[in-house]
Each structure stands twice: as C-alpha cells, then as structure tokens.
Amino acid sequence: MTERIAADAGRGLGHLVVTVLDILKEVLERQALRRLDAGTLTPDQVEALGQALIALELRFAEIRAALDDIPATKGPR
Amino acid sequence: MTTGNWLCAYAITRNRPSTWDVEPAPRLIGYRDLGVVVSEVAPARFDRIDTLDPVDGTLAELAREHDAVVRAVFRSEPVLPLRFGTVLDGEDAARRLLVAGYDQARDCLDEVAGHREWGIRIRHAEPAATTRPDAAGLTGTQYLVRRRERLKAIQRAREDVIGAANRLEEALRRQAADTVGRARPHGVLVNTAYLVETSREAEFHAEVEWFARELRAAGPRWRPRARGRRIRSRTSSSARPPMPDTQAVTGVPGLSDDLLAEVFTPTGTNAAEAVVDLLDRVVHRGAVVTGDVVISLAGIDLVRLDLRLLLLGIEGTPG
Image (cartoon, rainbow over the protein chains, first blue to last red):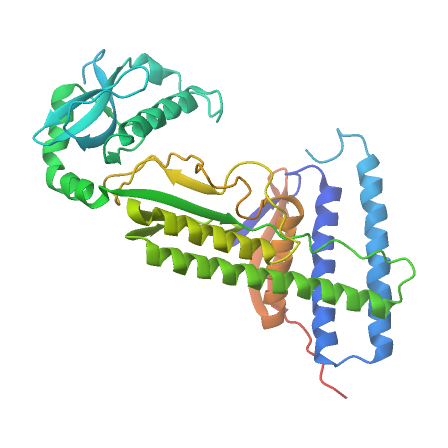
C-alpha cells in the first residue's frame, strides 16, 4: 500500500519541523531518564546528557523566537 | 409529509392535565395513561439551520427551547425526554408513537418515578510536563534529576487523582439505582449519569462533596475551575435508549460552584505531551514499521521511500 504525501500541502513548515523535533527531544529526554533510572550510565555520561539537553532547550527557544518574528503571512495559520 | 402542521415532540410523560411554566406553552397528546409533550412548529424554522454557532445559531435556539420544555415538564411529572429535533407530522403521528412504544415507555416511567438523574463529570488538567526548570546555573546532572522529579510528581498526582475518581464512581454507584457511563473525551476521568432515588439524594451529594475535597487535596496542581460547573443534573430521569435523552444540563443548587477540580484543554502543550507519552511507550517497548511511501509535489511523484524501520529504546547493558 502506497501513501502519497503532498509536500506543498501546508504552510508554517518551520513551526511544524520545530514541533516534531521538540517531540523527538522530549522522547530522547524520557529515554535518558529511563537510562538514568536503570543505572546504566556513568556519572560523566549523565552530566553530558544533561548538558546536551540544556543546550537543546536553549537552542529550541531561540528558533521558536526567530520563527515567531517572521511576519504572520509566512508563519503558521 | 404535509407541511404547515408539524409538531415538535419533546418528551413522554404521564397523561395528566397540567400547565407548564414555559413559553410558548406546549400541549399534551394523550394515549391511555401516557402523553407526549408537543408544540406546533413552522417547518420554516428548520430551513435556517445553516449555522453551527453554539450560542446564537438557530440550532442553539431550538435546543434551548427543547431543554426548557423538558425541564418544565419534569417539575411536575417524571419524564422521558425525546431526542432533540424529534418532529412529528401531526397528532396522529404522535399517537402512533405512543402506541408503538407504550409498554416500554410506561416501564421506563415507572422506573424513573421518584428518581432524579445526576451527571458527574470530572475533568483532569495536568501541569505542563514541558515546563522547564531554569537551566541557568544547573549542572547537567542537576537538570536531569530535576526533570525526573517533576515528571514523577506529575505521574504520582495523576495516579492519586485517578484513584480518587475511581473510588468516587464506586461510592456513587452504591447510592444509585442505575448508572450509565458516557463518552470520556481526552482528559475526562469520570462522565457518568446516576439515577438516584429522591430520598437518597442527600447522601449522594454528601458523597460527592467528600470526594471533591479529596480530589482537591490530591495536589496544588489541581486548580479550582473558575467557571462552569462540574456537577450536572439532567432535568429528567430517562432510562436508556430507545428513549433518548436531551442531555440538558444545569447546576445543582446548594453545591458550591468550584466543587470538583479542574479544567483541561486538549490542545497546545497537552496535546504534544500526549504524543510524547505515546512515543515514549512505543520506544520503550519497541516498534517495527514497514511502509512504502511516495512523496509527490504538485501531483508528480518525486521520491519513493521503502521503509523497513525498527524503533527501540536502548536499555544499555552494564559493562
């Protein structure tokens, strides 16, 4: 069964991409917490994961702010 | 169907002469000891149902009229509300309706006499799990630990509330002659109608009040709902289909307005979080995806994706 997706179907692609990546980040975080709970990470790894998540969080905030600055005609909805 | 003599049918009740405090006054068409409450309606009114405006639309207006009549009849007699929008083609049709449903309608009326139906609806609003601790000055480890505490706290609160809601349902069921579960949209923990004997209503309400306190105590994460009412009573005590109800709702006099906790909006962050929760479980258990996707632009197939995908969280083996 073949599904067809029209790539020009929607606007606000930037927001859509950020939302999808945000969800991916959340899933990664939960997975990291599972690993933390399971005790299969070294303290260094835990620290590195935490730092990476903080960095991702800040970066996402920047991207969202940048997208929101785009005039509404080019933004979503 | 003839035109010009339509009857809007509201409810089935006892065939006793009564006047109802509602305008325009409906009338009763009787058959043996049952009657159907109707009023004349111009077919033209149904021509204008072209708007779904839930407040001012024609449909809303008709629904409010229907509700007002059902309420008015209920003040003096037990009532089986008919589905909103039931229109009959003249008095003969009304009588045929009563003849056809006589036995069932009478049994239902006997069953609900001396009872009232109370609807209990509890909505669940969680704090946003995506709310971040202020990352400034935190080490990576501290950040992760705080996130874990927060997610766990949300999970605990959810379990507390679900537990309390289940106990509430169980306790109310013991007070009720009959119960009917209704659809629970996302975030609604309890949505049940209870048929309560009038003499037991005080106990029923006391039970609700008691659990309302417990639900509120389940955590500061439960904001009291600012408007609307959580306790709904249907003015009538209908039994199950085929005597459909109107689901008219009203507040309960004497019960405080912010009795039960909480508002939930199934949009925005909450919807995203539902996706995250779902994905988290999928990843944890693992998933295999196969698919054949063609991506097209302007109707022209451009890219073909033949997927053989395995998605699985890495549990990490020590060493």
